[in-house]
Amino acid sequence: MQVTVHAAKSGLSKLIEAVLLGEEVIIAKGKQPVVKIVPVARGGLKVGLLKGKLKGAGPDFFEPMPADELALWEGAH
Image (cartoon, rainbow, N blue to C red; front, side, top):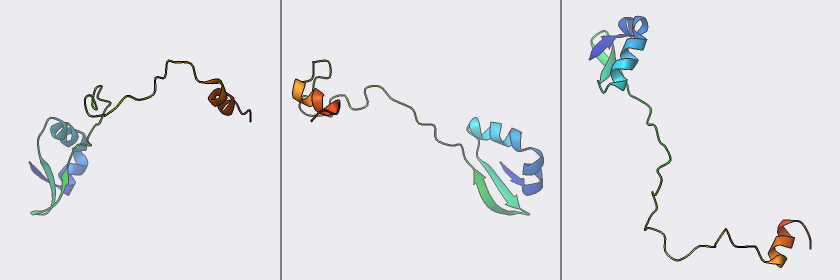
């Protein structure tokens, strides 16, 4: 859909809804297209994204930390 700047100003919320439903919206000055309204990509956390891609075993975070390392974390020298 192509609309003029004036029409875009008066119907912006409807244009946004159209874009979010997958419609292409172009704003024109006169008959010359100048901009396209596009939705912002929504990223999210995808659980298991790196499953099978990491090599080797990482540290076991549930095991107790050795006393000398724990002392460093707690500020002892």
